[in-house]
Length: 528
Ligand SMILES: *[C@@H]1O[C@H](CO)[C@@H](O)[C@H](O)[C@H]1NC(C)=O
Ligand SMILES: *[C@@H]1O[C@H](CO)[C@@H](O)[C@H](O)[C@H]1NC(C)=O
Ligand SMILES: *[C@@H]1O[C@H](CO)[C@@H](O)[C@H](O)[C@H]1NC(C)=O
Ligand SMILES: *[C@@H]1O[C@H](CO)[C@@H](O)[C@H](O)[C@H]1NC(C)=O
Ligand SMILES: *[C@@H]1O[C@H](CO)[C@@H](O)[C@H](O)[C@H]1NC(C)=O
Image (cartoon, rainbow, N blue to C red; front, side, top):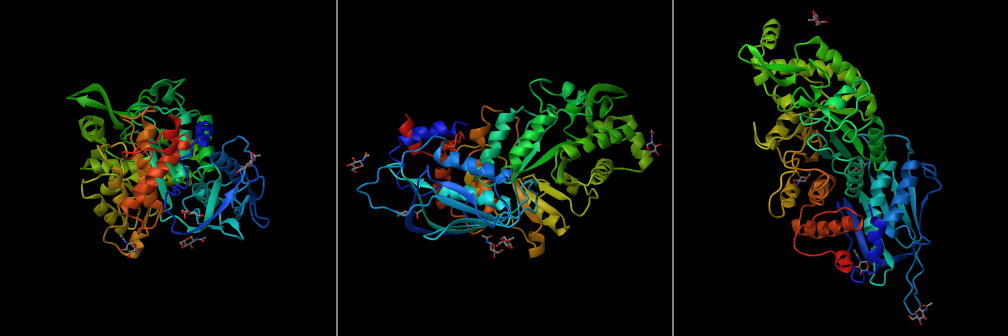
């Protein structure tokens, strides 16, 4: 990202003056005043409170201080502005950060507490939180509160913020199978996720089209199943880098290895794994879903998921389970024989058999799991702590009815059906995504509490690194605010003005976010 260059051109911008800030997502509680303080870049620093549990050496916060310094002021040095003849205003040269528990080497979890309070007044410039993850969210808010006058002086107004997320799981799905996304693109996406306080990267690593994950136990998978086994893969080192980059921003990485459908790319690397489809009495030469009738299948899955369980430290794995096409299973005489032996008369039972066996394997590795809604729809028996992700817009029922049914059955739910960012239409489609109310279903308070959040999804059929960023931003921001802010934050005009400014801020930070409507950003105007 060329944030510093962009910032340099912004230096020349005279017209940025007095613009209200681009707070996105909107905090739960904020009071701001018409009283401002100056910040001098050369003097300004982030500092740990003496009694904070985290102190220098806490990598998550040390690095965040560095990042936010650069985002705010660039990496250059700044002459003290000439203020003679100007009314002096109070200077704030330090943001004091205080956390109650350290956990600097931990990974963020679904249970992480992201609450924080920010107090900027005559006596204080203080960020307090229980956890380092809350401190990260507060630093982002702080950075969005700083503004510049026409003369180039930095200011922050007297402000009080008390903030926490409405839902803990605020995700973004990236698909690296339909098109390979270079590592740098994933890392940049994590940066922009942190700017909008998203908390989960759902990494849909593999699918029918390609298998870019380089497995240590089964290197043939990517050798034979990737687009290019040298350039279009994610090595163990790449995966570690993604996970650490995410951790430093308070973002979990939820890895998805979808089975038994969506697995064509697994076939070449693991002969015998997929079901041979038949045309009449002869194999047709094509393959269907994973073959659920063979013991080898489960032996392979045991070894494979043992590796995955340790490669991805998050408690949860996403096991897929969507869109299993029964045609090929139906055509195969060995599968028919297996069904008869098991007494199954419906392919859903066969699917259930496969998924239950897989879930038992993964549970034994001390992992929780997320699955797509079909697993619930097809009545697969799952552990009570399973998380079900709702993605189908209408079938078999409207998505809110589906959320209702899932939570009534006592399972936790994730909503993504209305948030498919890969679908595009002419005009401001972010407004529909913004208008969604994830708890708009008939349910008790207990049932509603089972909705743990949702995900914006960016499926990759028509998306690669050329168009990913403008298609993601700022539209993903609509979902980010819906999942962070209070349910009463829903005025579209207010959202539009803030999201437009947030988009300009994304540009300033080097994210090529597309415009929301007619208009311009001050720094763009100055650049041309
Ligand atoms: C910040 O304070 C200045 C006056 O010092 C005022 O003009 C401006 O509107 C305030 N901004 C916000 C967001 O309250
Ligand atoms: C600072 O600004 C004042 C007028 O506002 C000017 O007279 C003075 O020369 C300036 N000082 C420097 C060091 O540029
Ligand atoms: C975080 O904020 C929520 C909402 O106010 C509150 O219910 C919860 O107790 C807070 N958690 C902590 C640890 O302060
Ligand atoms: C597969 O495993 C089951 C249970 O361990 C066993 O009963 C069955 O005979 C095995 N089938 C084959 C074909 O090895
Ligand atoms: C927001 O949540 C409150 C409390 O749960 C509820 O009473 C209210 O109806 C909700 N508002 C909307 C617009 O959903």
